[in-house]
Length: 228
Image 1 (cartoon, rainbow, N blue to C red):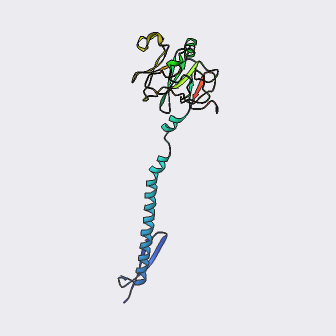
Image 2: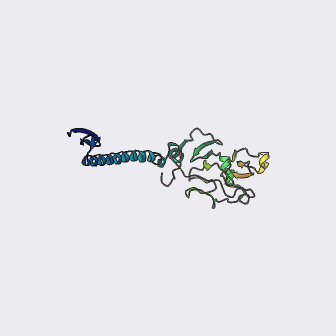
Image 3: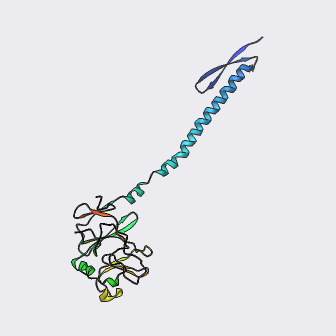
């Protein structure tokens, strides 16, 4: 005597009844089961594969986005020089480099203007890395000769030169030293405009970064005066 059992097999998207005769699954039911199983496995594999792809893509997507530190490193910075005294120096970081801001005295500017050209490698800064709007012996923007903005890295091997405004320093040449920068690594010297002395390892004058004046006392490093 034949009897019928109703077996229920769950699959993605619904429920399928399967006819079982005499304790065994019929050919038609077997086909249904196999088809259902294939669909289930294919669906599960797709879902798991999709999850895997999403999981794998997260690190890559994250790596495309610059970090906050990276953004900050290249962003322009504003420096308030209102309280910087004549002869003083400020040091800030821009793009991972030290930037020196020097407020020169009238005596320092006079010394730079009258510095013997033969004692310098490039007195006119023709080979220097500096913006086109910076010119003259002072290497500043017109009307801003008081302030000198430099990248504080020696052009020889990238050491940080020491600011030595002390005129007549015996360890730097005595009376011939009118103030400037000294790199202790290999002895390179620069005047108070960052111009390199002749006969020292550094090949060029100190670099001047792009900069502009937002106000008389706010200097913006990283934005050219021509576009500010």
